[in-house]
Length: 106
Image (tube, rainbow, N blue to C red; front, side, top):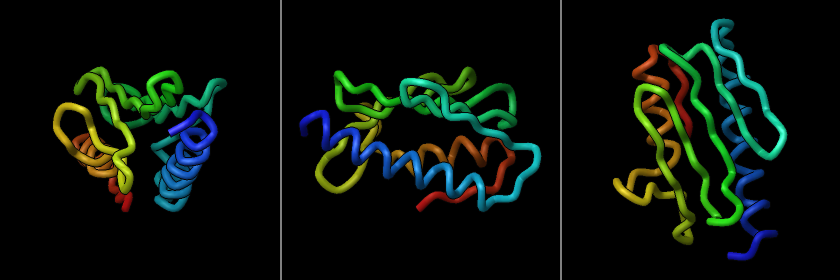
């Protein structure tokens, strides 16, 4: 996948995440899109969830203080973690649930 296609796909995913966060109506949860395509989600337990575009590797990275980091690459139909094979949305849903936040991405 070239950089333009990666950016297009990442924009879609980031939009879906932001839409789900907006729809959740959780006042304790806040997010901010930072320069360079970084989404920082605050109010989820012991720290933030950071979702980052890693353009050079064509991956979406997710990091938390409690759970560490995850690297998701496009396999042609979904974003999969390079170690576990878990999908990006399954990972985020799990992180939200661990923090006691009811948001379900699909």
